[in-house]
Amino acid sequence: MNKVRFSVVVPAYNEEAVIKVFHDRLIQVLQDLHEPWELIYINDGSEDQTGLLIERFCAADSCVKCLSFSRNFGHQAAITAGMDHTSGDAVIIIDADLQDPPEVIPRLIDQWRAGYDVVYGRRIARQGESAGKKLSARLYYRLLRRMTSVDIPVDVGDFRLVDRRVSNALSDLPEHNRYVRGLISWLGFRQTYVDYVRAPRYAGTTKYPLKKMIRLAADGITSFSFKPLKMGIGIGVGLSVLSFLFLMFVFIARLFNLVIMEPGYASLMCVILFFFGIILIMLGIIGEYIARIFEEVKNRPLYVIARKTGQFNRSGRCPISFDQGESQ
Image 1 (cartoon, helix red, strand yellow):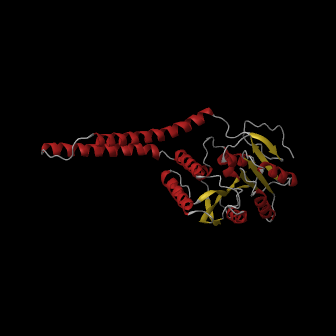
Image 2 (image 1 turned 180 degrees about the vertical axis):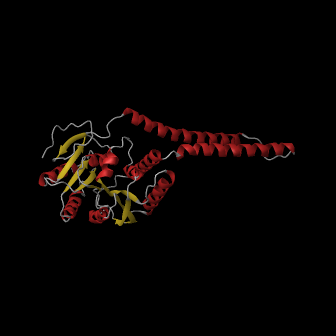
Image 3 (image 1 turned 90 degrees about the vertical axis):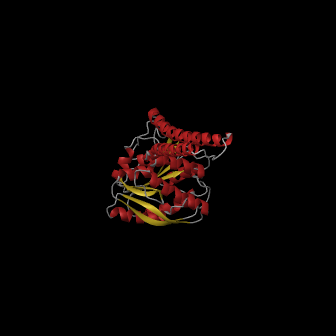
C-alpha cells in the first residue's frame, strides 16, 4: 500500500440532501492531485440516510472510510475523531454542506508545499446568508479575538489544512471541551491563509443555529481566556467607585440641606435589582468555568465509535469502540 499523502476529514450530520453531490466534487479534486489520499467521513449520529450513503461510498472505493458514532457527539468531537484516525502527511478538514468549496483544496496544498504547517481558508464573502447572520458572524469572530489570549484569526472556520506534526500535537491535547480552531492557533507553527468566497448551503439546513453559535462562542472564550472572570473584578471596582461617589453626593446634599429626591421604594428596588443582576451574571460566568472543570474531572471519552467501515492505518485514541473489526 502506498503511503497516504493527504487525509481528508469530513464530519457529517443529517446531510443526505447534499452528501452525494459533495462526495462527487471532492473525489474529483482528490483524483486530480495524482497522489495517494484517504477520505474519512465521520457520521455524527445522523438520523437520516447519511450513514447509509456513506457506507455505499466506502463499498465503492477502498480509499473512503467511515467512523460512525453511537450518537451525536457534536462537530468538534467529530473533527477530533477523524484527525485521530488519519495517517496522511497533511490533514484537510472540510464540512459536507458545500459552503466550503472542495475546489479550494489544491490552493491549501500549494501553501503547505511552500512550507506552512497550517493553512486555513479565510472567508472574504458569504453568499446566500441573511444580513443578520453576517452581522452575528462578524461580531462573533471579533469578540472572540478580543476576549481570548490566543491569536485566533477572524472570518475563519474549521476548513483548513494541517501538517502531520500539527495533527499529532492536537491529538495529544487532553481537554474534552474542544474548540479545534482555537487549539490549532494555540499550538503555533507556521500559519497562513487562503481567501475564498463562502458559497450558500447547497441543500438541507444549517447545523449551527443561533443557540449552537452562542455555545461555540462560549466554548472558545472559556477555553482560551480568563477575561470573563477578571471582568468581575473590574465591575466590582467600578461599582464601588460609583457607590462612593454617590455617598459623597448624598452627604454634601444633606450638609447643605438640599432636597434632591424624595426617598422611595422604587429607586431603592432599582438599585438592589441592579446589583443583584451583576452578582448573578458573575455567578453564571463562574459556573461556566466550574462546569468545564467538572467535565474534565469525569474524564469520559470525547466520542464513542459504534462502527468503523474501511481499513484504517491508525486506530485512534478512543477507549470505547463497539466495532470488533473494520468492515468493508
